[in-house]
Length: 98
Image (cartoon, rainbow, N blue to C red; front, side, top):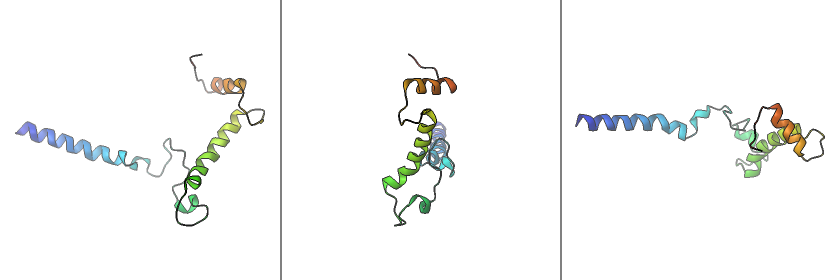
């Protein structure tokens, strides 16, 4: 019976420990790999209708992706060439299989 109680307590402790992380509370309002730069609904809700569409939600992320794309696109032609991509990888120390 003591073993059973020990196992139950261990499972409960694990559940209590992991639940906040699974619920996303580990972000604490910070990025931590997430591309959102704000959690303020008023800033995300572009038309201020008290709801956030996918376009409103993703526009923030798309703006950051565009900035990254533009940094790699050295000649600013709107296309990342193989040379530009390989330069980006080299600068960041990324090894590829090819």
